[in-house]
Image (tube, rainbow, N blue to C red; front, top):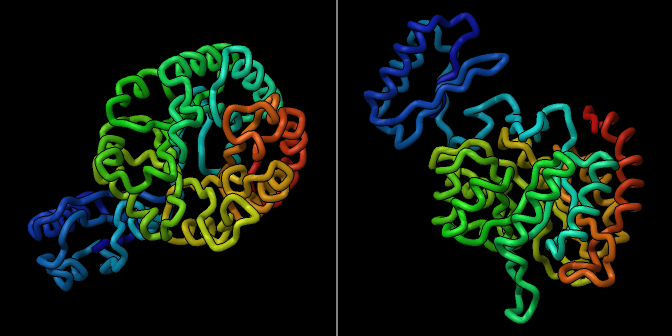
Length: 338
């Protein structure tokens, strides 16, 4: 249930509505937007007297919410959420946030060189994997703690906030201290214990869509994080598994539009993982911006042919710089700026 207050509603009128809602056995979330203030009921709202609420002075309307996700729902929070980043950047709003870097951190020379080049091209953040979930146990699993330390060094040189994927709750203290944006990968999108722990940190959480997950399941995973206390959630569409085998996954750009309609959370698109082919990344990145994405996650490697992970889908720093040049006018057409 949500209660939409009139623009001129007083604090006393809001307090009266909140009191009735609490008497019904729910917690109340207050969302102050530019057009109206919304009171959202967190929990089972069946015992709330809807008619009594609707007749209170200052109440514009009372609505039942049919969707299972509440806090991530645009009805609860009409205005777009903007997630602030260290250093003054943000995801959401007018800025188009582009995070770029290698799938895996391989060495100090590799990550610092790439960081400097993507920074020069206009990236808002540096992505890099230190802990890697791989289909084969014999594939490169990442550098672990050492990879996080090298990302820190690259951040110190460039000022770029770093994004990296967490695999286990055991590593949360490490990530809380050293990583700016914690990524939950597609394979862990429904690792509910991990999601609950993400709700206990104040770090922004980049939540990738599971490879076989519906939009509702994706938003319900965001709900786990938000319900546990952390509302700084960034969604990321990275392609879903279909019958098509030519591309690594099938990039679902319609999901960007759907999520923006259903939720207030910012949405990124990862064309690298979606396509699996470096030559597709530029055009699909441009398509994502045209579809209304709030940003991009791009894999960039200075030697893709010899990359230890996902080389075929990684573009070079030179290609990334060209992509950023082409994105600038397109972002303006979409009402954003790099």
